Length: 168
Length: 201
Image (cartoon, rainbow over all chains, first blue to last red; front, side):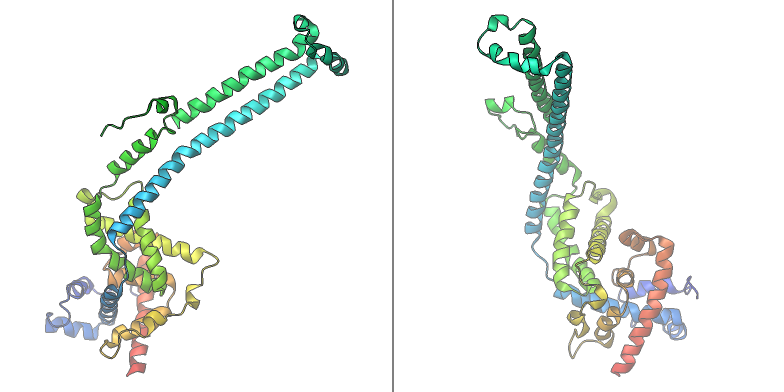
């Protein structure tokens, strides 16, 4: 098996590619091809493939370049939209996750503040009944503070989404 | 062109107001070395050879129709196209053939796709007609007996005149592998062509 091929292979390839084979080549090269298996194969394949290429090119069914160009512009636009929306969605998911974790954290802290949850629930109706003056007392401040903090956190989450989308 | 923004757009994040899209489109225009006219010229010169390559290697002209369209779309939306001024149209063409080769490979990898060995080669098996030369008439049946990769490298080498290195770049193979694969494929193809011509005679 000789992978290197014949020494005259490149010369032969040039004549084949330029369409000079077989009329415009020397008798000496033709005689060499007859006696060289490697070059004979080159000629056989190149002739067959170049003829098949010509036939296929004339039979090719291709669209207009304008249509392809327009479709490419459309795809570019779609890709640009996807690139913008992806980080925005990520920021929203992140902000929601932060909110959720913070809410659970506040709930945990709040429950620890309450020595007796049941007593707090019993005291809740009175607090809601309108004794706002008593809200600063121990029972009222116990549930009002987490609500205020959650509200601040909600505003903060909105700002996070806003600025994340601004960078995206 | 200065684009006027409505007052309410100033309150929106810039991506939502469309500024990022415009900036992105501008960056694409800077990256792409083609304008409409340059692309039209390139397309006229390269679309038919690309179709011929895809149709012959896949033995499926309908598939080639689709792949040519997709190859140009990917070509035009690629992040880094070859620079026509610096590298010339040949580099762009090689890049296009590389995309086409990748699309063919993806098609063959898809499980729902018909294996190429089972695909009918009727489109090119009886081509030509009474005036077609022997070698062209026998190429279709001979090609159908080769592996898809062998068809690819033979077509690129003998129909497109690509060097080993260019074939390697188009197919993703190592250059040394291309040399060996091409040698074997050429031997097999020559045997098949010779056998077909003898049987035709």
